[in-house]
Length: 315
Image (cartoon, rainbow, N blue to C red; front, side, top):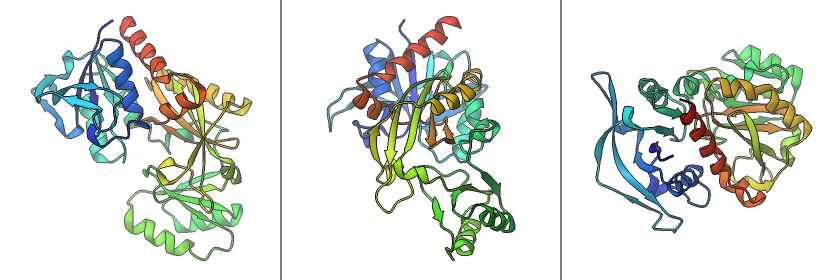
């Protein structure tokens, strides 16, 4: 099966080829004989009920400093593509949401991974609230009184922006910390949305586990351990990757959410588990493939392309 694949992502020249998940997805697609195009979200065009993109033919190779070749810009009709990979990084803002609305016009005839409607309807810190018994105690509110009441009950808490990413804006507020009101002032000034408040899960010191699911099935995991003096384990802020295996609780969580992910067309997702709790379901541009591949001697991008090709055969 040879497919025409358009990859909607950030500038390819800026990626780290030793860590970027989109890069290995492109390598695997190329190895399978698929034709690749690259374009940026701003290159999308909606006109006369057709969706196009100013894209370039793409070739990739694992050579640092020379990892890609782009052809001349050409206007491609996305309805004539077999697959669009929606792989630009968050923030999940109005630009991101707009891209899902535009791509909705070509999906599912052109398979968009992940389904743009489901990406739009499954914000990562909100979608998780639809699954009972998997989250730590959580509050989503703009009310300072509610936050104070939640803190009085749980003492040790985490504050984070509802649509943040990469660990940005995440604060650990310990019992007795006098900065809560100041932090609420900052959040109110910076964000129009409510904030997320969760009971602090001390197991984060042992790591925040990223589990990759393909078509609703868990296929691998990596543990991200925060630096000394940090409560955030994101690799963007210095978290250390370590090998990980799935516990019985991890499998229970995956079994609880997996069928819904598959039903929604969320083919490639990454979930974050701290201790016994699911904290986020990442549906926009999940990462972690290369780290898991190195630790476990696997090739998760092959599993993703197997699932994509299976969907195209069934279409």
